[in-house]
Length: 144
Image 1 (cartoon, helix red, strand yellow):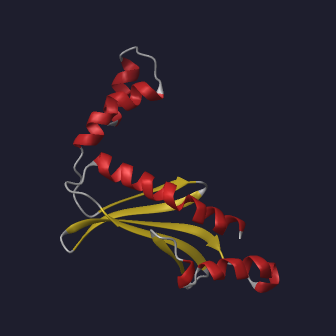
Image 2 (spheres, helix red, strand yellow; image 1 turned 180 degrees about the vertical axis):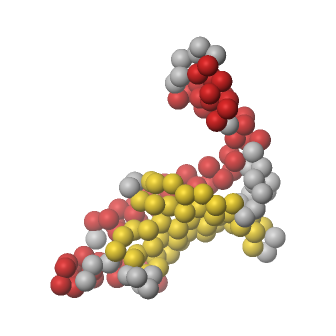
């Protein structure tokens, strides 16, 4: 994929996003990763870990996003209460849940079964769909 993007630049064509996507889309569609697969990235200033694993012989996409430290009451009692309220089961978003770690970090976790065969396009489109669906819940955690 990266080599095709480099070819676009070296071939003397303008290096635009559309050109790069056109050149790399077929490579991404043909990519069939071996499972388990894991990659990380940043979205909306948050660190996201994406894993594709097999569960019950089906591919499963798991996203985990660190939403930040839950402050101590003395630091910000209102924000602490808001973040802890999110971690309660009744506030679970439809495609995921919040979890509180031992280090008092609020995490957003999402899981979905992927269609087979798992391809690069499949993974990217499902990650994008999951993140766009969870965006309001990220905003709630960010504003407290």
